[in-house]
Length: 426
Image (cartoon, rainbow, N blue to C red; front, side):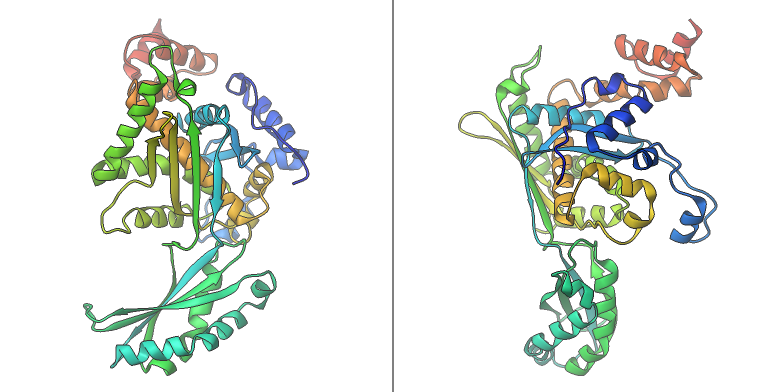
């Protein structure tokens, strides 16, 4: 890290989009080219045509920046690509509260991914399992030989696991897991290649037939964790004592722990924060979603990804742990010009560092949702921030968009298109 940026940008929401981008570029030390990439329309059609099939154009999402984050003692500005109002504002507000109490603490596991090799037609599962286990050194050597550059960078195969399934719809099944440290890559292409390359040797060792050779998105050896501590004083509002707000957050969190119906919405709110960062960095948000929800159900019952409690001094303590298979190299992170600029803003030097930021963002978003639910309810604040969309839908243009939105949010009436149309007419 060669610079010491601040994530506090005073009056951010009152600035114009151009002024906000200039402030972020200045805080992040971006040059003019990188700053311009954040403005939109950064993906040239020929580049897009090389990224996926049957390209006809590009599709843009709003790009916002969450401010106020302080993670492991470092200020971080977090770009977020998302269409839903209130997400960026909520994360920034919670980060400001947490910042006043010391900020977030986070850590991440080494970036180990699993490649699965499915083996069918095995006559003796015990013997085949032993054969694989006894050949671990050979398997690891052959795995590393598939990607010598990865090994030079400090990655490579870290071991194997053998999973037995005696009774499946297609008969007995053996599954070999290759555990591979993929360094700063997401790792899908690397581990898939390794699994496919080793398939013939696995058949020789087991006497079975290899079918699927594919990574697992349940990256449970690649977890990221974050925590926060917030005093009651920092949670106090004009209408509520901080102790009551903290108690409400803990009670709301307990609901999600015991009830999968609530947990689904609870975890969706967490991903409201994480997914926009994953999208903005050009990473695979579907893989992150799949891993998170599978991890939430790892006990056999779907539950919350966060825990909330109050310590003996009444301090609110929040924690999150979930798989976070993110990369800084390969894929859209290197081909999408805006993703490259986003990584510059984040100023991260490893995939693990990016994973920690994502975990903190998810925890902040969860805190925002639980705080709203435990106090005034979720809709008033959300709809107030949604008022600009409502105004545009009602036909407002130019300066009228802000006028109608402010009137909608300030009044006591419902924030609806019908009311916006009436305000616009007046």
